[in-house]
Length: 229
Image: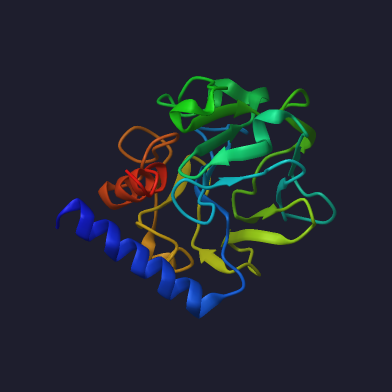
């Protein structure tokens, strides 16, 4: 399929999905997460979708958290008012990791990246310029939920795995040493577990900071290409 035809087909799918699901479409999604090699070496990868290619999303005041137990669970952080978050371009991957357990991150984990010009941010979860960290006690091994909430307190994206449930996407077990990633090329099907994979949080399995499949790579390229290009 030629690039122009593929682009037109993606735009049509986005229109159909938007028509079917209005007024709610996630501006940002969790498209991969991992438990690390051991311990609390967890990480979460967000993909900024926006409203399409060439758009941006203001992430100031957003919250990333899990839902194990009561209250704030094991993971809770808020994006600060830093200017970095004011206009994140569609197609940007944001990888957030537990800085307190670097040795247990997967060996192919990318280096810190604070420059969004390459459509990649790799950031430690700690209180500072970019986050207010209430806690990173770890994602549950037997089950947990990961939730993204906007500055108005509205749920943007949610998934659960293992023994926990209650969010739009329900995955199977993602226990110690494992990861899960989305294979698709758009929002259509992102809440269907058949479009996700669970595998080792290691080379040949997870892909932190990189596309998850050939189809996924095409989606990222599409989002990163302005409409006039």
